[in-house]
Length: 338
Image (cartoon, rainbow, N blue to C red; front, side, top):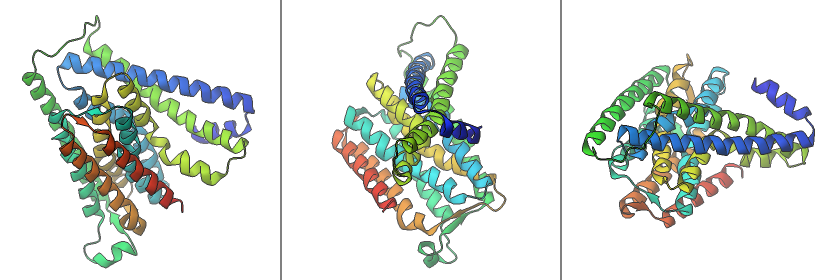
């Protein structure tokens, strides 16, 4: 389907491409509006923090593009893309997306979430580095890289199941702790709200899948170099759902969903995306040396900056930490394409 779509776009006229890009941007925005609205409704119906809904239900939906791309890349014998997509998405989610969102408006920090999922976030990243590290020959990590075995992939999927079960338990406990939470008046039941939420996620994901190749084709048609296209469009293409969802949440005054979505997406990129990619490949995933030289340290640094920001920001993530996160993302992007 994607190959056919890319082929069709490469032959489409310039006016058609411009109309398609405009239509997808509109659809993407409407889908994100719908997603955020239904996520807020669901949090009220279940009497749980909006950040928890963002870290679980919303994150599962917006992480689907990363999972699909990484699993297909692994099955096609391209483990570099699978690893790069997952680790790069963590850097992009926390650096670019959370950084921009914090600069746009200081983000509310729901302590029950940032003190639970917020610690699982760097723990999952550290676990990934440890599982990929060649302890039998440590010095080779920076020259030959490491490996994620297929069994490790299944172990990560097991941890994913445990994380989701724990999230349900936390949601129930938070509901009991806040029994007087505001409930939105809605004539439909929870099932219908979940259906509308799913439709919102589908609109965001599908619009993103069409928008990225359309913009690439448009850039080529306008004579923009392929290097620029790769560095600006493809690099964060699969993170576009998280970006639009987070910025929409902030714009609508629901910054808790933005924070929860990024935290949850980072956790799922390790447990869900890389777990599925490694588990689906008989030989597991090779981890190139560049990850130990550059991407793993950047990922851990950016997560530490976020944790420090949480510790020193009180009830809202302060703007200076947003600038640091965004600057880190921009620096690593420039270095990657040097």
